[in-house]
Amino acid sequence: MEKKRIATLSFNDGTPPVELPILSGTLGPDVIDIRNLAKTGMFTYDPGYLSTASCNSGITYIDGEAGHLYYRGYPIEQLAEKASFLEVCHLLLYGDLPTQEKKDEFERKIKYRTMVHDQLMTFYKGFRRDAHPMAVMVGVVGALSAFYHDSLDINNPAHREISALRLIAKVPTIAAMCYRYNTGHPFMYPNNEFGYVENFLHMMFATPCEPYLANPKLVRALERIFILHADHEQNASTSTVRLAGSSGANPFACVAAGIAALWGPAHGGANEAVLKMLDEIGDISQIPKYVARAKDRSDPFRLMGFGHRVYKNMDPRAKVMRETCYEVLAELGLQNDKMFEMAMELERIALQDEYFIERKLYPNVDFYSGIVLRALKVPLNMFTVIFAIARTIGWISQWNEMISDSERRIGRPRQLYLGQQRRDYVPIAER
Image: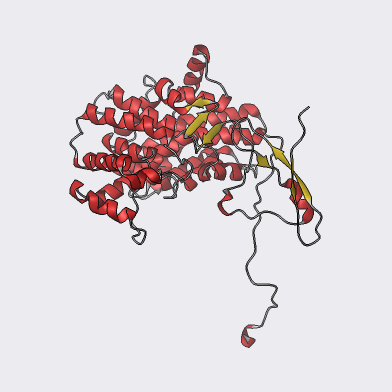
């Protein structure tokens, strides 16, 4: 039997040492289990949880140094090339890629849940026309629990599955309705003749006046975006979903909390920031000036879409998205578009300039996905909504895993208090 590994924490003030077990996962670095530290009355300080594992999980694995991303053990490159988005949804939710029979059944379950309750549609009239679509998404997704309260027993696996299927099916419908409401166009109902991604494009861009037929290459491009963004370990929005869910909150409320976290510009707004940056640069002739500014530490300007907090090598999603980007531009004849020319010149510089190479500031998935979404005529304020559609399966899979975990506890981070010590109340006349 392998000897159990222990780390010993010693103190220089006479406090007895503490033994902390060392845990090993199937992949990745070992983890020190600090739960015994509670016996001393002390706890750890880790702003941003950069050195803290908040849970155990078997869903997604990232190796930032090597540039790997696995969903349930499958490399993201293989899934993006060969799988459909709903196959990936099945994989994340149930743990395995489906057989043909299971795939057909899963697709059927999703297809016949894409409609939303008719009364839910009246919610949109309560929002201003110019409301940001993400603000509407937070409200409407959170309201699903008021319409589908027949499946809110989180301790019932069948209820959890029904809620998961409803979220996967209805979030694209809700998202498309956000866009239509914002633009003043009539809502388009789902069409069961279409696949998942094609149906979303239909609800976004079709009109009641004529049939809609999406370009298959553009459908596949958006499907890849969905696959590449489906899950990404314990990021801010996923951790938010888990923290909200740890209290026993219903899954619709938890996913709404995840959408709110995703809305933050440091999380889901990166591809939007890329296009805003290109707008600021304005012309390909200005790129050398902006590259020089990016290298100047005293200048606050930063090139968006380069490097990644987790990946210290090439973002594995970026390679797939780069190929997709070039395919879309060629299909739509946009290779000479001013915005895209600037993006490709920035890419060329980043891949050849020693400054970027030494710092491993490679173009990331957000750099290319923003360009693709613009080519698909998705407006800028819908970029993060697209991200939310893709990430819904990751959120609900992580939530379901957490609820099933025998070690689940309500989340309660501690703090290092630096405020005032005890003070006594002074009457207002004496202050």
